[in-house]
Amino acid sequence: MKNYRYLGLILVLIGLTIGCNKKHEIISPSISNIDNPINNFVWQAMNSWYNWQTNVPALADSKDDNSDSYSTYLNSFSTPESLFNSLLYDAGNTDRFSWFIEDYVEQQKQFQGISLSFGFRLQGVSINSIGDVILYVRYVSDNSPAFDAGIKRGDIINAIDGVVLNETNYNNTVGKLSNDTVTLSFVTENNGTLTSTGDKTITAVEVSDNPVYLSKVFDNINGRKVGYLVYNGFRSSYNDELNAEFADFKAAGVNEFILDLRLNGGGSVATSSYLASMIDGTTSTDDKFADLKFNSKHSNENSTYTFQDTQNDFDATGAKTGEETINKLDGITRLYVLTSGSTASASEMIINGLKPYMPVKVIGTTTYGKNVGSITLYDSPGSDFTSQSSANANHKNAMQPIVFQIFNKLGESDYTQGFTPDIEVVEYNFWNNILPFGDENEVVLKAALDDIRGLSAKSTIKNKNITPLKVLPLENKFDKEMYITNDFLN
Image 1 (tube, rainbow, N blue to C red):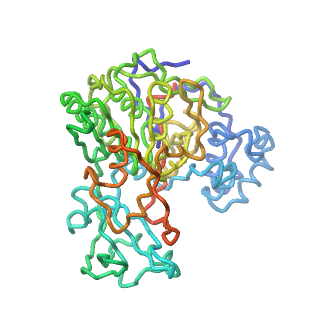
Image 2 (tube, rainbow, N blue to C red; image 1 turned 90 degrees about the horizontal axis):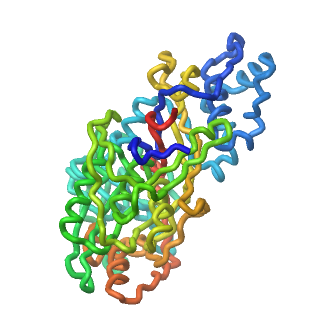
Image 3 (cartoon, rainbow, N blue to C red; image 1 turned 30 degrees about the vertical axis):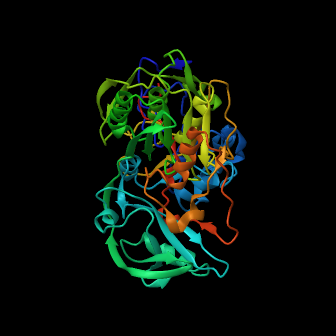
């Protein structure tokens, strides 16, 4: 078992770029009869690394024993992506997470929160029995097109490019959000009536989204000093900023902590272990935070993450910029985590990994349910497909398949259906009164503060006329990921 207590590696739950010596030997058949050589890369890499390799008959080790039948098989797929999709185990159910990468350079930028974006996240809601639909703004990135246009959390949109939303046209209309430029119509609500407040036109630009979004200290909640952090992604290039916030929490003497992960779909495994170390300052570096378990071909990569005293810092390219001592809270005996269906992967790892050490109270709605992680595989067979530097220069295709499963100290990993909240608070029921993050009366945060006050918190009752709707054009494949980087494998 490898233990990274001293090495301080970057385990990042979304995309792994790895260059190292491999024990698993790759023997590729002749590809002279293969129409698209990238198809050979797809099959060979998935056969080596895929978490469910033994469950997929088409990935059987004997598949490439006969070069003629193997070539015929690969040639039956018109694109590498179609082959990749055919190899996923119970696609859309068991494996909801693996994906094919068209351009791994752009993908790496997105892993660090850099993407072409309007800079907001929306929630669709069907608001009444006659099928009227609105979008409310869940979040706005600083210095983004949405931010510059004055759009803020809680704003209500009822039309896109002049098309008023309803259940019938919803899917087609929200598809306009994938365009470079959109015009949004805003309204206010009063006693069921929507009143127009005007239109705003915004154009997507490259946005660098800082996941360390908001921190605050509530000085006297039933005599307790409560730290509150809105953290939207486990991005290694912001490790230093995350640690700096905990220096402030520590200086303030907080003895309760609320971690808002409602918009956090995951990211770096190493950053997850760093955050756990910041929250639970009483654990030693001998204490286990998580185990990573790979398939039988790569059992040598099975690894243990312990709590840390120091962390590595990185820039947006993934280059290490330094090390620093982790700022640990020493007065936290329980943790409140605010959640939604967008809370996934590395976020769920925090809940699962800290549960053996302290009570973790989940408030909000059920989390996504992702207990597995991925690496980036490149067309570099000499490295067992883990080295970007030796990747085939003729294309930028890569893959992000699931290759490991996460377990906590107690060997627990059974949360594929998500973590059910201890106190259910359905944010979209309050679509016409969404308050800013950090407002003491914001409905989900208030439930946590009330629990600290000793007040009886009750689950909110769902309004039968209100139905949440997905906003698929704004959901990136990597939004709910756990990944590890090239420092990890050896």
